[in-house]
Length: 171
Image 1: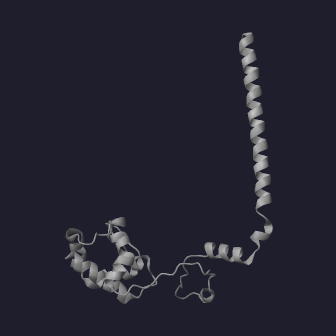
Image 2: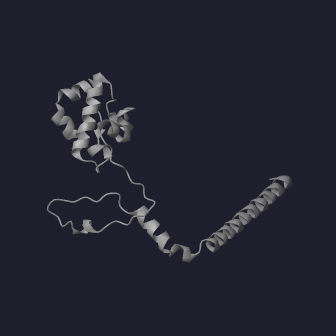
Image 3: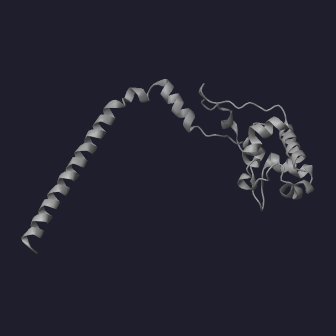
């Protein structure tokens, strides 16, 4: 190895070592600044604690037949900023509020509203079957229908009105 190569390796190693040292110092400074700006008192304030509890609360609670469901009676923490969903007035409003999310573009194999070819085999099964699949949910060859389209807060009669609307638009 020549003297120039040896000198280059020594200088390169020195520069690399200095850059690593600067990185470690910057990391340490950032940690120190971060710890001093987020005080422990903030994490123990009531509003902060309630907001965290609301974010980590389970989204649903399910009662199981034959099991002790007493724990479901305990109210989940809520905040005043939590969004509330209104209940649509009829099948058309339900479609606009919830059903169009999947049945508009055909997400997850949902038949698009107005697509007669996609709806024909489903309509042939009868309205009782369509109501059952819409209310209870269904996993089939062509896609997935979650129970009540994911809006389990809605009454069955309203879901049936939404099905009637979509079938009427797709005949």
